[in-house]
Image (cartoon, rainbow, N blue to C red):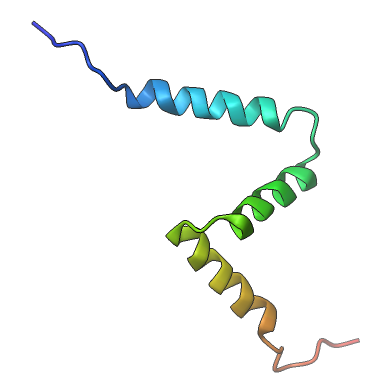
Length: 69
């Protein structure tokens, strides 16, 4: 006999993915990337803070070898 679950992780995942799909309907790939980056910049979630540190580090690096012309 199985108990009914009060929480279904798969159902929640599917609902979140469906909402994201509706929110991004009609957007180009670049617009979707910009939307994701905007949400990452605005969030205070620990992973988003880490992403911002990595992004800041990568944008602040100075190339050591100039590209050949």
